[in-house]
Image 1 (cartoon, rainbow, N blue to C red):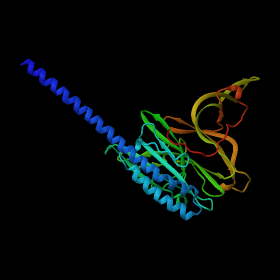
Image 2 (cartoon, rainbow, N blue to C red):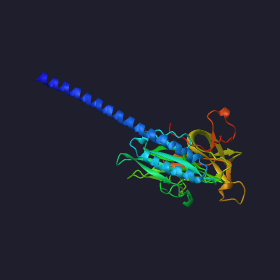
Image 3 (cartoon, rainbow, N blue to C red):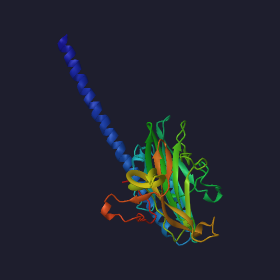
Image 4 (cartoon, rainbow, N blue to C red):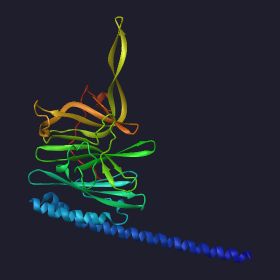
Length: 336
């Protein structure tokens, strides 16, 4: 009896190994097929992107962009497309959260008159279906009133090209914040600091949230300024100078003084902006950096504003007194 049992067990093991190898081979074949499909999409989309960037007329650029959007939409709905690394250089921004909860893809179309219209997708994980859903982003910047105070959805989006996803955590929850830029028009450019969340009962994204401490109506930070100015907005770990109010005794009296201190922390550093001349309030084409740096630090699940944040380098020898950190021209990253 025992001999028969051992023979059956040995046979079962052989069949188990056979089916395991078969499944592995089928899986590898499916992945290879997916790679071929995605490679074909990439090849076919590249010439369209060239036209979006270099075609001589608005009509040609928008016709190419319409086909580009359609093809991109099809590609993103392909199984396992979340793992595909798109390679469009710096012409298309492709950013994926480290936990693969979502991917955001954005790019601009620039008109002859210098106006920008942005396009894009969000590909986000649906916990119910255990699949990725795809949302097309529609730039409605011209129609949005009080853009810093409203929560927006994909069909009503403050268009921009996203440059970075910032991931922060509090009490086991991950918070996502996007940094973005757009050229707007021939006179004005815009940068945004924008939280993004996903509805609990679906994968649909919402842009802008009340995550800014002591700023009740703020849903995103919107900086609009002259096309000739350069405004710094970046997430970085910096040696930062802050000031504490302390009471000291001097000549028999107690007085309040501000004592500087330096500490290293991660933050969103950005330039304060203001009109270059009096009487130009509300005209962003005349807004420029004031020379004062501000910062948002993530504290207990909220972005907390720090006035007069002075970004500094790790090496004290390279620091100069109140020297602003070096500004960078707008650019956007792609997944590596």
